[in-house]
Amino acid sequence: MKISLVLGSGGARGLAYLGVLKALQDARIEIDEILGTSMGAIVGAAYGSTSDLDELFARFRKMKLHHLAGRPSFGPGLMSPGPLEKFLRETIAVETFEDLSIPLEVFCTDLQSGKSVSFKSGALIPPILGSSLMAGGFTPVNHQGYRLVDGGYTEPVPLAGAKSGQTAVVVDPGVIPDWPFPFANENSALNLVHLGRVYQQFLKSFDILIYNLTREKMKAREHIYLAPELSGIQFTDFHLFDDIVAAGEKVARDKLPQILEHMARQESAAADDRSPVTSSMS
Image (cartoon, rainbow, N blue to C red; front, top):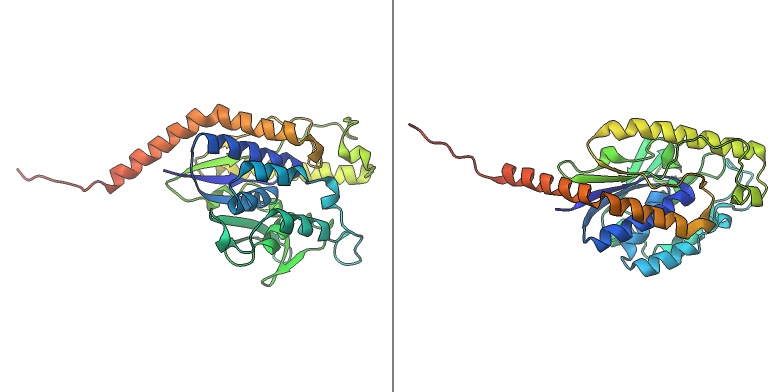
């Protein structure tokens, strides 16, 4: 029996997914599919392109704030997504969904319709890039007739798409949006690059939106919920790589008994469904 792994948005907090993958791999829990939004799509694709976690960790250690900051744009976004696209092409070692070793479904938001759209075949980079871009902050990605922006606006945790009858493990790196405003963390990358109070307020409002939408999406179906302890860590804090990954690994190891128990129950239920029905006449 395998699991469906659901990886949501979260920016730098999504580095916790790497720790979760390490714990699952160490426990020899197989992944049947990955459903990813934003940072979850990036990590899911990278893992599907190489299951060598040492290599994966080395790639993501290189991810810095400047990968999110492109040149000023005079189009429908403040910045070009060029630096992020370059990082994705260097980090994800394959070109198409079909080249991945684990099936992946990527969730984006179509800026034209306002609806969620997902991709699981064809070119890999365009939907992953689109799924990672805040509307207004970056120029949307034009792909297959859609104008793609952050999947977190519609599917911050794409649980509803997971296969039925299979254990769904949801990793949610979102934190309760209770940080003070302006932010008090003097070591935050936000303060170091002087983004300003207006942009900070925008980021906080986005986190509040995602937090509350996530709570609703969690009601879609039964699942195992993993919430890494990431209080005080903001979505631009890529320099806290080791702390974030460790938090992901810890919560996954703590939840292993629950995951294995649920998998056993699902396997038993599936076996019962496969058993032939016998009847006797008296």
